[in-house]
Image (cartoon, rainbow, N blue to C red; front, side, top):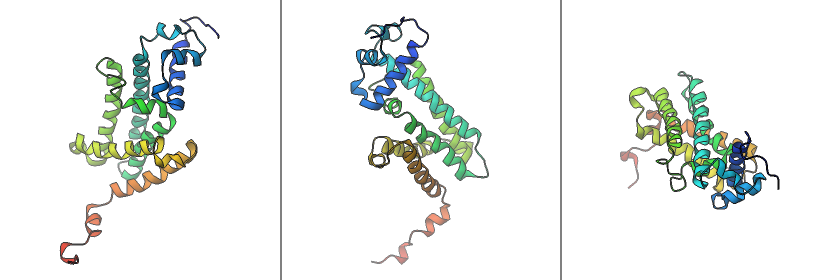
Length: 216
């Protein structure tokens, strides 16, 4: 086993990259400081020069994940076209689900307070709040700033988060193959979701029979 210096500039990054790959391949139960060190090709004590324990590693992955997600959502919001709400919805939702497809290991732990206590790691909490802020920004772009409240944001969040989970770890992803197939599934599903979510209220009402037309 190689034993690079514990203060090598890239060692911290190697530990994080190895940890994320381990989460992706074997799940959080397999993540231990010893196993990370083994897979990174360093001594068992080397990770402790950068991280106090396993939770500290997870907290950094959570922070890194939310930072990336916030950047993706911000880019989507910056490209938003007020005249094309469908494209705006697709851009932001694709950024969210696409992140989960690209980083399934990190995605699996980002919403698990039992694994990473944000109260202990303010950076992780702040990164999560930035990502949530971009969600509120999206709702404001689509419905006006007055409508950008937590309830409406939760509707959009539920759709994209649910789809991400179903593709990454659920039945939608089981037969989808690799990332390319999963992205194709994401695209077709989100296109249909956008159509339904932006359906005019009048059309929704017309799609349902009135009480007077219902059979006894």
